[in-house]
Length: 625
Image 1 (cartoon, rainbow, N blue to C red):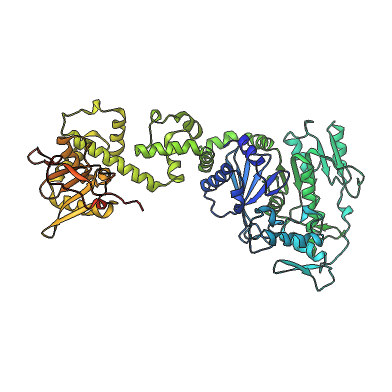
Image 2: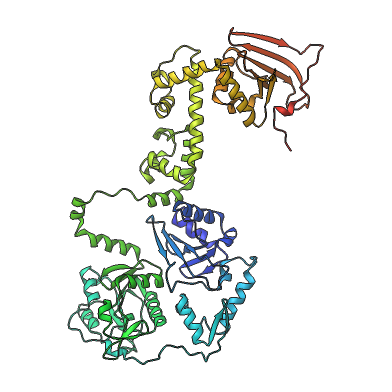
């Protein structure tokens, strides 16, 4: 899956909550979208071991998808987001944000858009949405995306939530919060030099004239005057000092010490979202930081304080403002300095900044820190993106029972280009698919090799150097060396003379095969008869037992049933006319192979007057029902 195919598949989606930059879908709608996209999403989830998710967010502009978990999607009218896993499929990175302990997590609206119209709860979801529309809750959609702001909006409209449904409040619709009037304009100060966020932008090369600047909340405009004096394309807006200025889309939007002077949390969210809308490349947000001891000297008001100048200040901690910005915008907030963060819309610009940021300490890092290994999560995403390639690689591993050499897999160059080596690909495959499945394939291959070496003892000794290259690799992988393989094969061949072991294996085979017949004589197992198609499914010792007999006879072209005599060291081969078609086929030949005497007895029944028919055919083949 590449970005072009990803975008093409998104265009084929006919349902979902569609926003300008993303499409949201509940997993219950996955049957209605292109199969390749739903399958790819599940593969990515499996690759990152994300088991708890029920809503997918597909980016319409970037090669990204998010796996969102709303545990109460069906139970809650406006379910809260518990976890978001955002996967950057281009950079092979992912980020996990947990809202489990958040008092104000993001919430969902218009749930009917997330599911198909045929869904059993579609009608109910439509009713819930209409309730909100009827009372004007969707007039400003920028501020309704969080639990507390949604609750506050409902209360301001004079309503309340009862069991998730909107009902008329018994009160007068006013909030209990003190509606104190604060003097926001007094927070704007006169500057004789660039503000802290502007200095940081200059230091990192963003004020070199290549970027347009919009100072959202520019105060008295001192930064603007300085920037314009340098010929920089800079404009500003401030509700108190530049209220007539137009808000314009710009490369960089600066929201410098604005949200910390806004006493209404909902309005803060709205301002951040507005600033983000006007941002083309990067949004810079600055706030005031302070300790609890410093804050305690002021009068508490809402979630901040009132200063002696009757201005409001919401003092943040570094982690608090980072969490606030990421929850509102839904993207990573990069710390530029204490209280100053950047959120990049242009991800290439973000990488350029990060590279420039660490160049100054590059040598120091190299001298004191070991080189980090390849990020396992990146490799897992690569694996998910190239499922068909790695599936073919995995199937080759199963065929060989081991990791293939470079020349044993036709698309080896592609695999190594993506993950570095076959060994890394094999390790990933074990994690991605079933290790138990591989262990079974490994055992089967090892047993096949032992059978091969056991049978080769009947022929002239073939030195290791004359073995095929694949066999040499098998020997090294499964036995370590040729001497060990030959020794084990010799021991196995001698074991076919052990009556107790042959008996035990015949009993086991009779219990595990789909069809077979174990006959007894004097109360003890005497022989096991199987159809020739089950010979490869026999335990290894019995495969050697039959194989040794066939060294004398050859191919089972006209034979259907093989009888293993437990105590006498004999194998009987039985051939029937029209075995597959007739219910009671007629016996046409019987061959008794006496391994101890290295002799064969042939019995022909084609022209015999005594017609021997097989009356218990169902004992040897599976009957179709």
